[in-house]
Image (cartoon, rainbow, N blue to C red):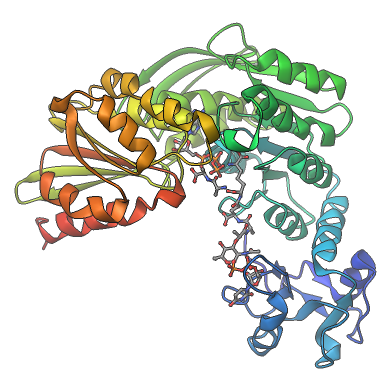
Length: 475
Ligand SMILES: CC(=O)N[C@H]1[C@@H](OP(=O)(O)OP(=O)(O)OC[C@H]2O[C@@H](n3ccc(=O)[nH]c3=O)[C@H](O)[C@@H]2O)O[C@H](CO)[C@@H](O)[C@@H]1O[C@H](C)C(=O)N[C@@H](C)C(=O)N[C@H](CCC(=O)N[C@@H](CCC[C@@H](N)C(=O)O)C(=O)O)C(=O)O
Ligand SMILES: Nc1ncnc2c1ncn2[C@@H]1O[C@H](COP(=O)(O)OP(=O)(O)OP(=O)(O)O)[C@@H](O)[C@H]1O
Ligand SMILES: C[C@@H](N)C(=O)N[C@H](C)C(=O)O
C-alpha cells in the first residue's frame, strides 16, 4: 500500500511527539510514509537515516531531501541545513523503534498477526495478505521485512484504518524476537514450524524452539498461539504460549484444531479438504507442495480466529503463486520441447531442501521425463552441516531425482554419497558449475535450483533461463 502527500500517515508534529525529537518544521506539515533507503524513496515520504553495517544513511539525507522527501529524521549531530524538514533525535535507530511503537499504538481496532518459524514465514505472511483481503484492508510486511529494521518500519508505515496487520518476525539469535514481538503486540502469533535452521548460532533445535516461542511474549491479553501440531517441539512451544496466557490452536495432520482431512498434491498446486476449528472447507492452493498445504492450515486457522470470512479466504488461496527464489516455476517452450526451471535460490536448510525435493518429485514423468536437482550449500548449520547435507541422499531418492548437480564443499559430501548414476557434475562454486550444468540439461527436464543465498545459486537460474529463452519458440 503506497502513501503520498495526499494521503499522509504522519505530520512533523506527530513525528516529534513520537520520537522526542526537535524540528523547526510546521507541526502540521504532512509526511506520507517512511523510507530508510534514499534509492527507493518516493517524493512525500519521510527519510530515516540509519547507520548500517556498510554505510551511514546520514550520507544520503541531502539526496533524499533533493529527491522530494517530506522530512528526514537525523541524529542531532547532523550538520545544520534545511531545518524545516529535519527532525533531530538522539539516535535514529531508537527513533525508528519509537515511530513503530507509535504506529502500532494508534491502530487499536485491527487484528494484528505475527508470523515466525524456521521456514515459511514469508510465504505464510503473503498467504495471509491474500486470504484476509476479502474481509478488510490488510497491511503486511514488504518482502521479508522481518528484523530490527524491517519490523519497526512496517509498523511505522501502518495506516490507522486497517482491518488486519500481518507482520513477519525473524531471528538469527536468541532474544531478537522478544524485542520485535513486544513492538508488534500481535493478537495472533503463528509459529509455522521449528527446524534446524541457523543451527550454527544455537546449542540445539530445542534452543531454536525456545527462541521462536519468544513471539508469545508480545501477545495481547486473550491472544491466540497457532502452532504446528505435527512438529516434535509442539509441546515445548505450547508450554511457552500457556505461560503467556495464550489460547492454543494446533494445525496439522493429526488431532489438531485446524486439521488436514485430505490433499491431492499436483505439480501446480493442491486440492485440499480441511477442518478449520469445526468448519469443513474445500479449497485449491495455487502453489505446489505438501509443506505449503500445512502452512495454509495455519493461515485459515488465523483467519477463523481473527473473525474473518473463512470461505472467502479459502477461495482466495487459489490465486497464490510461489515467489521468485521460493519455488517459482517457469515453463519455457523450446523448439526441442518444454523445459521447466524451478527457482528455489533464496535460501536453504534441511527442512526447505526436503520440501523442495519432494515437490520436484510431484512433476509427472509424461510432462517432464527427467528430474534434475541443482544443489548448493545450506549455510549456518554449524558442526552438524556435513551430516545434514549427506542425509539428503534419502530425500533425493524419495523424490525420484534422476540427476544431481552440486556445488560447494558441504554439498560435495552429498554428491559423493550418491550413486554414480545420479551424479551430473560437481564444482566448488556455483559459478564454476554454471557451464557444466547449462550444457548438460535440455528439453524434457524439470530443473530445480536450491541453495542458501550465500551459495549464489540465483545466477544459475538466470543462466538456465537465458539458454532456454534463446531456444524458445518465440526467439
Ligand atoms: C539497513 C538496511 O535496510 N540495509 C539495506 C541496504 O544495505 P546497504 O548495504 O546499502 O547499507 P547498510 O545496511 O549499511 O545501511 C545503511 C543505510 O543507508 C541506506 N542507504 C544506503 C545507500 C544509499 O544509496 N541510500 C541509502 O539510503 C540504507 O538503505 C540503510 O538504511 O540496502 C540493501 C540492498 O537493497 C538491503 O539488502 C539492506 O537491507 C538489510 C539487509 C535489511 O535487513 N533490511 C531490512 C529492512 C529487512 O527487513 N530486510 C529484509 C530481509 C531481512 C533479513 O535479512 N532477515 C534476517 C532474519 C532471517 C531469520 C530467519 N531465517 C529465521 O529463522 O527467523 C536474515 O538474516 O535473513 C528484506 O529485504 O526482505
Ligand atoms: N512448512 C515448511 N516446511 C518446509 N519448507 C517450507 C515450509 N514452508 C515454506 N518452506 C520453504 O522454505 C523456503 C523459504 O520459504 P519462506 O521464504 O516462506 O520462509 P522464511 O521463513 O520467510 O525464510 P527466511 O527466514 O529466509 O526469510 C521456500 O523454499 C519454501 O518453499
Ligand atoms: C540471510 C541469512 N541470515 C540466512 O537466512 N541465511 C540462510 C542460511 C540462507 O540463506 O539459506
